[in-house]
Length: 391
Image 1 (cartoon, rainbow, N blue to C red):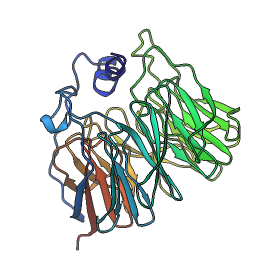
Image 2 (image 1 turned 60 degrees about the horizontal axis):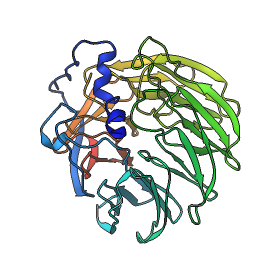
Image 3 (image 1 turned 180 degrees about the vertical axis):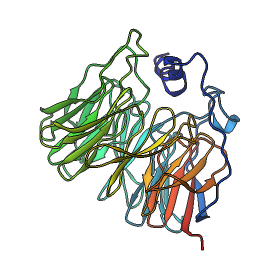
Image 4 (image 1 turned 90 degrees about the horizontal axis):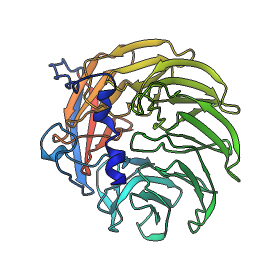
């Protein structure tokens, strides 16, 4: 019951905040492709189907929304499914390097550091594997669900559970080193931000609209910044979750919150350098000159990295439940609830290409590997595309 209560606070019921009826997803209009997109390989790490809970699409789209994103290290791509499969692939060719079936209900991950691969699960387990061969090294159980990726360094593993606790575990055996907690509101979006380890700190967003930075050594607070201020008369109106992972670039931190702002903060103090009003429950993507985001209503926007000014906004994908953006050399890439992947021009926001992956929702961000883009849908199907200019 606790799971379903949390889930009911998620994505589509949030339309009730300001609309009497759920806003209908924008229909896709034909585009003139300026990029050639070719499917080069596909595979699967299993999936988990539910009844028609989310309200859109056919039975293939009725999947549990989890933080099972892809991760790439060098030539290797790592993926996991909710039914317990974790696997490694050659990112260029799709050749499976190893596959382990654990029966652990993964909800977040994987995260990789050196030879250590770590995932969290919806039953609270955190499991570590040898990244070279998939051998299970250890597992521990936390007090609540893990539905986002951990962060891993040589000194600690940082894991967020959905009860608002940030845990630090030993990479050697999973022993808990410290924990810290933020107050949880009475209602929040289902999910948790991915922690970030940077400059001897662990940085994470929380459901109360705060971004917290703590010492990696002992969990003591370094700074606390407000990204979303809970406002309104009802619990739904006061939703203020910070779900997207902070992005650290040099001495700057970029964050975004639901019913809040996009902020550039000082890494050492959390002081805001600029703030732009926005609402997003996805993370950001960073380019050389711009920070990119998908808003709660499905617009894709580019903001100037120096001052937060809007450079362009693309609204043709409204209410299509877009992923967090990914950035390649020439394009911003997002995927949607029908499994379509969209390439937008980085400078203008105009459509450059579109590809389909099989009609199943994609909730986690695409991964860019040179001129290739890889996506995983909500039932664990992986599709890789090669992108080139259309002459």
